Length: 353
Picture 1 (tube, rainbow, N blue to C red):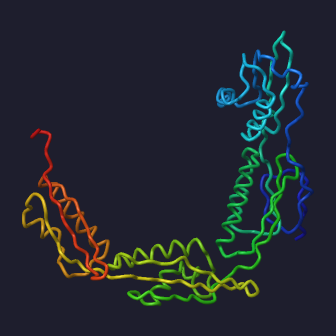
Picture 2: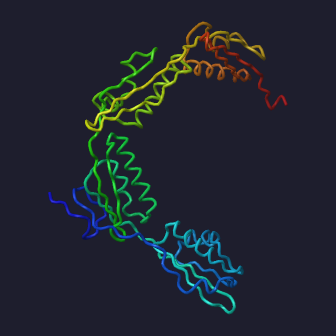
Picture 3: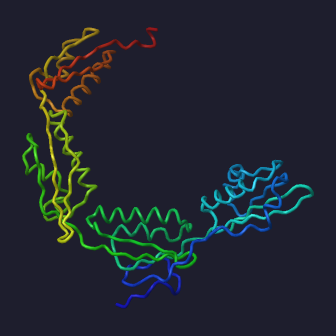
C-alpha cells in the first residue's frame, strides 16, 4: 500500500502508515499591539474590555488581569496580561487595542477563539497507546495538552519494551497535526538474576515477578512499570509470611542495545522472620472469650494478614461488649520477636452520660 504524506482533505482520524509529514508551521504568536501602548503609559484607565472569551470563564479572566480601571496604565502589566491570556490556551491569538478616552485610555483585549483539532495523522508506527493521541481529534486544539499526551504515549511505548521508540508531533495546518516515529525493536529479558530472597524459592520469586507469563519473564518483554508493581507485591508477600522488615532494592536493568536484550538484577533482603513473643493485656479486664476470639498464641509465626484478621475479629467482638481495642507493637529485631500489648478501654455510651 502506498502511504500518502500528511496533507490533503481533512479527516478526523487516520491509521498509521509510512511516510512523512508536511512542513510544520510556526506556532501562533501574539499579534502586534494595535496602536502605541507606550503613548498611553501612566494615563488612567477608563475601561478594560475582554472580548472572545468563553462566557463561563469571562468574569474570572477579567478579575485575573493586572490592568484595572481607574489605575495608571502600566505597559509591563499589559504585556504580562497578554502572556497570561496566551497561556490559558482558549484562543488562537490575543491582541490588545488602546483608544483615547478624554484624558484617559480605554483598553480592549480581544481573543480569537481557539478552534478544534480536526485531524491527527500518524506515520511510521502503530501501537495501542496511540489511541490516546488519536483521541485528541474533535477536542480543542491545545498545544499544551498535545505535548503532554505525546510525552505520555512515548513513555508508555518505552515502558512496554520499546526502549528506542521515537514520536514527533508537528502542526502542519490549522486544526491538523501530523506525527511520525518508530517503535524500534522490542526489548526482551535475557536473564533475571536474583540475589538473597531466602524464605521464598527462586522459582516462586520469578513467577511472582512475571505478568501473564509474557512480561518480565525470561524471553518475555521488559516492562519497567509492571516490574515495579510486581516487586511491591513480592514485598507484601514476605510480610504476609512474617518477614515484616523485608526489603527489595530498586531493580537494575542492564540494557544490551546491540541485541535488544535486558538483564535484570534484583536484590532481595527478606530480613528477619518474626514470631509472636509476649502478648500482654492492659486496661479494662476482658472476658476470656475475647482471648479466644483473638486466637493468637505466643512463640508462633504470624504474617501481616493473619495479625490484621485477628485484631479485626477482636475489635468487632469487643465493640458488642462496649469495649474499644488499641494495639501497641514492639519489634525485637536481634531476637526475631514481636511483642504485642492490647489496650482495652470501655466505650462510654451517650445514655450513660
